[in-house]
Length: 195
Image (cartoon, rainbow, N blue to C red; front, side, top):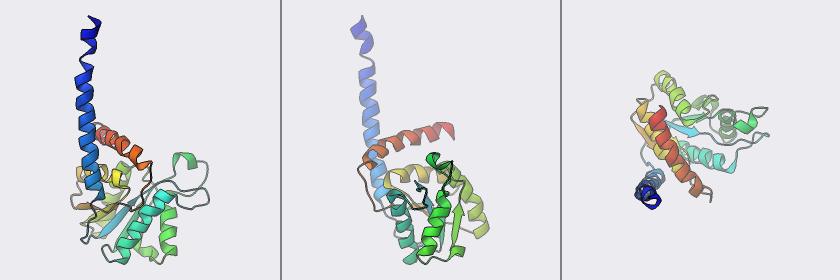
């Protein structure tokens, strides 16, 4: 009796793992595709900023990719988004402000950068972007993040009504990206249920 009862979970586990593999593969293909066309703005999603206002290597890779898009003329505006990380609530600079300072120090005019210091997650960044898009008459965007984060990010922007969204992933890779990929796939389905 016990053996029979325990058998139901095995096929379910196989289906879940197979689906996870398919979704991870799709997220890799989608996330590593670099959009070559033009757009009005690049939106950089935040990551860790250290207490001395320096960007973490992951965030620096994202900002450098956006800087490349700007310098190559693919975008005319930059939006940098990110609040204070959980570890930085007692002090430190919001991610959006730190990214803006980084870009200005590298020659981007401050009036071409929109800093969103309230984008504490991907959904809030997308939500905060919509009024910016209206006020600046923005119709197309390139989201810049780590490759594993692209599929979920584009889904959220489209779900909120901004359809012309493309991507350019950071070209910096780390071993922990392999762990972040399945975590982000789970987060994708959380967004489907919650938002």
